Image (tube, rainbow, N blue to C red; front, side, top):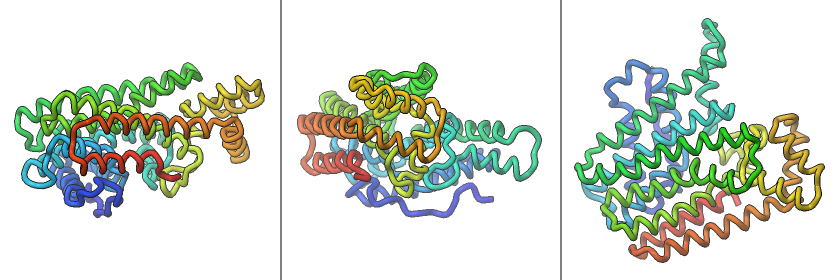
Length: 369
């Protein structure tokens, strides 16, 4: 059993314009997974982790980190660029940790067009007729895959070959990013347990669960590797904060109305999982304001999982449009994107890098539109 599956091309949107960096990222990921000294101790976990990180994904986090590096004067090629790309594979491993654990918590059955890790292990348990409960075994093994990804993310950053000062600078956003990601996941759990309907609170979840570790901190990490001055780091983080929330809002819309071929998950999964997203919070607020108690009941029923038939989900989708929630979210995405681009325009960087970051901002906030 080979722990590293056959290579598959990354999407053309990843690491836009610097094709050499994209090729290096893929090859460095493969090399890292192939050369871990203790991988033979848990081949099934390594195989599942390798399949997930090499199966594709948008490579959003290393992309923004790369352009954070470039914005601070990092060269597109040469030995320091190669070391930087080697360090950035840590972001893909951190993302793998988040995805695997998130799928267990949300009971998602697919990820990137394939069965989720907990489903893979539960199916294997059932097929082999092992002792105990298949679902519990699947969840437990998936948690270990996520834990392995997190441990290896640290290893990837520390062993990338960065000099001491660069690693020390990078460690500041890296520490913050890991904790913010976990805090965001916990806030998400609390939102469900407390039946949160406050837009302010669910936006806070989006801020920490997605925005911080998707755009803001990767930009910070890349800039830190290039020893960026504080004013540039502050501008990049401001750009990343607003853009990251806009990215999450777009993701919320895609989770309800998107194409499963593009998202890698069944359409409507967010509704089936009862996710308390800004989209749903806005819809409930609009329903209350207009006296639509029937709509409030329907939306809450969806969140509580009382009925998730295809017809019920179709009703909720119609309500999200009829109440104006989709329009409000689209407007918010536009406002946040404009605010992010304003912060970007204040940053001191080359015109080439600024233009690329603007294109990236447009790409991640309009995907699927």
